[in-house]
Length: 245
Image (cartoon, rainbow, N blue to C red):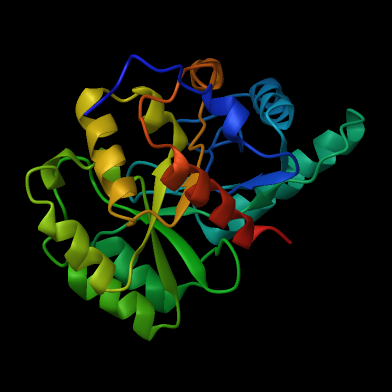
């Protein structure tokens, strides 16, 4: 699966200048990402150093774990942008959300405007343990409500690795797929990297983003991409420009 006899590219070197990242956890104090404004600032500066010009940060919305709402997220976004100005940082962060698909989200679809990446594109995720029983009902209801689901890091759902046909079913149900770039350097382990490579080779990945939470993630962008054929990854990175204004 992996080849080690040829020089591999450094991941950060594959990010083009003036790029956009649309999956991250930069709004301090809202979830398992940045804890302080200093953390937020350090992560943004690091991403700028990789060539990122725009960032759409996506706090978790996970009932009883991260009880974030539309108003909480947008208020924190405004606070962070004000702090950027006060610190002389020429950067404006945008905010969407990463929604856990569960019963709560099914209700939320019909009771609150969802925070979108662009137009009607919504970032969604599943539990890493198992898919919700009503998964396809949620995907259907989301689309009936006028949204387009972008499934975050499909390569990280270990319960799908031995049921690869489920990835095709999710695509056929209307999901777009966003890979975590760090999966390609083995950050989440060999099985996730193998799933990432297979999804890329099959042309199933639509976009690539960072899902950056902390400095350890930043450091891992210095890692080498493990795959022999990096063209599908480069194409997924390029496709991500769709979200750029």
